[in-house]
Length: 213
Length: 213
Image (tube, rainbow over all chains, first blue to last red; front, top):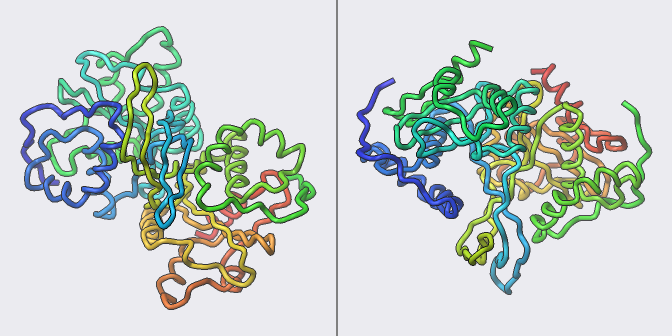
C-alpha cells in the first residue's frame, strides 16, 4: 500500500448537523468529481462522513467490499401528485435512525458500523449514540456480525476503530458517565492511519479483528 | 414449526406504487398493533412488503436474524427551520434506490434481497429490477454475500425465492425479453410456503442455499 502525504492543512470541515442530509445528497451526486479530486487535491476540508463514503467507493470500485450508507430516514406527511410530473413531497421530517448508518459485506461477513466525530480532545460524548443503536449493535454481534464504530477526534485529527462490544460494555456499565475517555478508546480500539488512499482504511483493522475472533 | 391455517380469503391488497413510502411509514408506526393482529386475525389483506417486514420483526424478536428494510431514498431540496420546532422538509422527491431494499446478518453471513410482486400469472416482468440493482447483486455475490429476490405472484398467491445468480444470468443473457417465465422461476428458485408464522419464512430456504454453497 502506497502512502500519500496528507494534503490537509486544517481539520475536517464539520457540516452543521441540520444539513447532514443535504450534504449526503451532494456527495452522491458529485461522486465522480470527488473521486477525481481526491487524487488531485488531497481532499482538503472534506468532512469525516464524506471521507468514509469516498473510502467505501474505493473499496467498491476495487472489488474489496460492498459497504453503503443507508438513506436518511424521513417521515413523510404530505405528497403532491402534480399532473405530468413526478410526486413531490411537501411536508416531511427527519427521523431518528433505528440502526447504524453503514452496513455491507466483506468476504462473506456482515459489516455494520456507525461513524461519529467530536471536537473534544480527551473524551468522546456518549450522546452521539442512541439506545436503539446500542441494541442494534448487540443484535448484530449476537448474529456473529462484525460491528464497530469509527470515532474521529477532529481537533486532534485522530481516528479510531472501536469494536462495538467495548462501546456496549462501556455504555451499559457506565450509565452515569456522559462520555468515553480517549484513554479507553486508545486501549480497546485501533488507531487508523488516515494519511493514505483510501483515506479511512478501516478494512485493515477489520482483518485484524477477524483473526482475533 | 407449527403450521397455521391461512386466514386470508383474498389476495394481498396491492398498495398503489406512489404511496409506498407512506405505507412503509404506517407499517413502522403500527408495528405493535400489527404483530398482535397477525396472530389474532391472520393478516387479511396485508400487502407483500408488510408481510416481509413482519417476518423480519419475527426473526429479530426471536434472535434468529437481523434484517432491516432500508429507508426510502429521498432527494431533499428545501428545508425550513422554524423557531422552537424541528426542521421541516418542504420540498423533496423520491429517488431510485441504488441497492436492494433489504439487508442484514444471519449467522455471521451477509444477507441481501429485493422483494417484488406481480399480478401476472405466467411471467415476472423484468422492469421490476433496475440495472444498478443487478450490478449491486453481482457485487454482493462477488463478496460471497447471500443474495436473492423474493417474487410474489399475487393472483396465484405463490411466493418464490430466486437466488440472484439466476436473476442476473437471465437478465444478462435475455436482454431482449421483458419478463421471466414462471417456469424458469419454478425450476431455479424455491417455493416458499406462506401459510404459517412467520408468513414468509425465507430463512429456511437460505439454510438450504448455505448447504449448497
